[in-house]
Length: 164
Image (tube, rainbow, N blue to C red; front, top):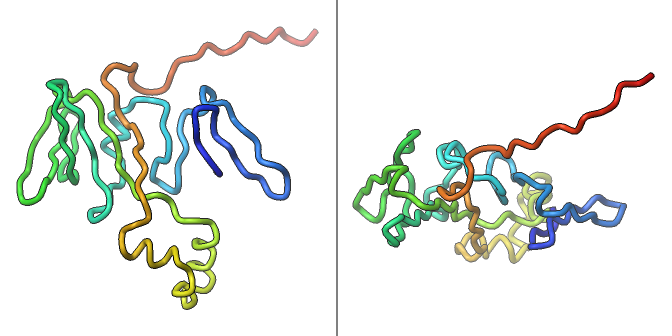
């Protein structure tokens, strides 16, 4: 995946030229178990998001207009508990308007390749130092929106005429 924008998702397929999948045709894009993009609203994704403690967080926008950001200490079917500094705050699903997964930007293909094949030379890549310092950047992924229908959209299957 090369890029996600308003037009769609651009997917590289070497040696062929990249293709653009229209945004309305993409439900989710992942990197391993972590979401990079989601067009659906799912509380199950909030529960399953692999939030790493030091560089990632969940950002809750509440119906009363306040915003809460923190590391999830507990997630259930009807609530979430965030750790913010040394305090804990519990929010029910009824209080929450949106949940965003604030995640670390994915590493480059080149960095991933050398991390797997020759990790001893990673000190030559500037990306290593950006990642160690926490400068790799973040990505906001909307996991839940109370104003949207929950789960996968139900599209009717097209009717196909039987063969004669």
